[in-house]
Image (cartoon, rainbow, N blue to C red; front, side):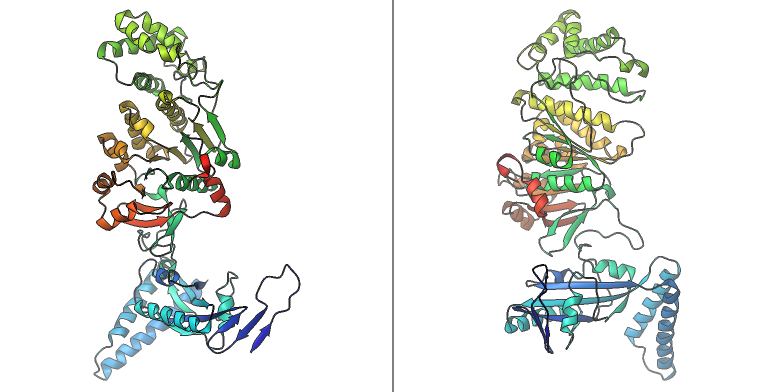
Length: 574
């Protein structure tokens, strides 16, 4: 039987001819055959359709579902239970042994009826169709045989849609039309487990419990070809650690996560050492702050926004961290005492106190703090002299005046590329302090992600690493998530603070590792020998997502537009 299609013009999309036979349909220059799933196993696990989706060949799997109204579901289950109970009674009356299949079906029907009555589950009429495509008839027959064999191993019974392959072909197109209408009754849990996005490698939500609404696409499962959707907001904490060697695609993956998080209304701040996120910020209307550019200044003595009673005290304590990072070490006790006195004096001189009404006054500058130190005895004078490069020397440009930039918007990128290497650590810390001050405002319940790319810049400094650790501990209570990205595993795994940052990240992503670091990574994350070999030879963009006991091998996946934005960096690399 031939079905000829009239070509109406250049806008027409579809094959020129459709030739239907008993066991296949010819579509243009290729062939296709549709198989209908007619038999199912008694129990299924999450992602049980993934082996069909990932079959090595061109195979399309379509699931058509129609919910059964509640007023029809109860009588349907009642009749089914009556048939099963009647069969059991007849066997008992005739002295026959009970059929185990009937016993199991009766028990399942009773449990399902109870869940439906309590509203914990619903019934659906579901049709599952598998269309196999091939270039030749011989290839089609071989592939169909392989698919049916793979399905049989899963206890699935696939039958061909004889003389109806054209209807099966259209039923597996993205049209939402079921031309075959061969359906079975499913409960909600079995239907949800059928979708490959419910990866069998990731923990599925408990029956009757809705999954979180913050899941985003991380990539494709490299073993099952299923889709890896992950919700960092549904975990014990919202932090993520991405660990990979240079060129492994870690920034590419993080850019995709940032972009897809913005779709959901999440605010994002990025510490960007190499201007890799500026094109993304320009595309979505974000803000880019170029630290080190002419006229761009950050005053470390700026007071945080808001009116929290303890904010002024906490800010004074953070200034000790800023000075320690500037000096590269914690000052000795005498100098720390002088610094504490100078901090109190410099704010008192400008009329700023613990009263929030005084916080609107202009904040003092680092120069003023150095002047107070110089007037505070020998210890203060020594500390003021050590601060000279940042007050009046070669590194003063970033601090020489009031803050000239005010971050705002749904995506704020703090670029460090124009800073000299000697200022990158303090630039990272000051940017994080400004970001954290905005997050720490009372009553603000918006979700935020803070991305620290190339976190080794901060981890190499003890006080900077301690600030990052405190931030990772406190972010969850403020509906914020910290994403730490680094190419040097030793910076994170070689210190107690680094290990603490890793342990406070519920989502951990490992990508290609250097041979020199694989032993430390294996020990820290409990990798198997196979996983370690996989990370040594992983392609760009491939890695392992670790969340508790779940481990999913994945490869980042992007649309053409996303790929263009994610690869726009220095040299266009990932």
